[in-house]
Image 1 (cartoon, rainbow, N blue to C red):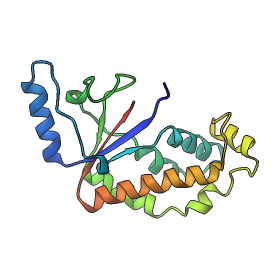
Image 2 (tube, one colour; image 1 turned 30 degrees about the horizontal axis):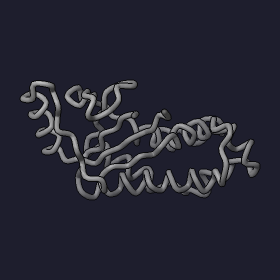
Image 3 (cartoon, helix red, strand yellow; image 1 turned 90 degrees about the vertical axis):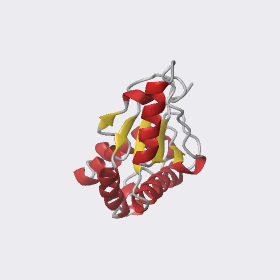
Image 4 (cartoon, rainbow, N blue to C red; image 1 turned 180 degrees about the vertical axis):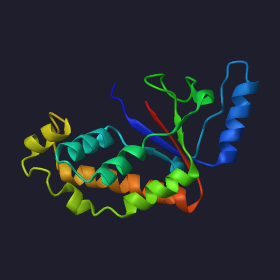
Length: 169
């Protein structure tokens, strides 16, 4: 089973309700079920994008924004439950609304074409650079699509004053 980066946009009130549910439930089930339109599965693309950006010595602000977009600052222990994630790695973590707004601002400033300009034209070479040996297809288009989804997701959360919960599943 492949590991994937997961994100969910949630309100502080929703998180508080999940925390109460976990405390009250005999099995600790938080009742986690954010709406599908507020969930994003980035597959494994973000890790390849991060690797590529580090290998080409991209602007540290850009690298930091991409990394921070999928890293919470507060572990949400009450979401450490089998109904939320499979237990691989750390429990889900929170990127608070203020941090989401900052990340959104940084991601919105990215020129995606310039960011991907140093990706080799040869698919196999580009895939190796990102750690995606055996990738088939247009890697530039794939990374562009995943970055755009990430940017739009954070913008949507920031516009609504929502937090982002991140985890690997």
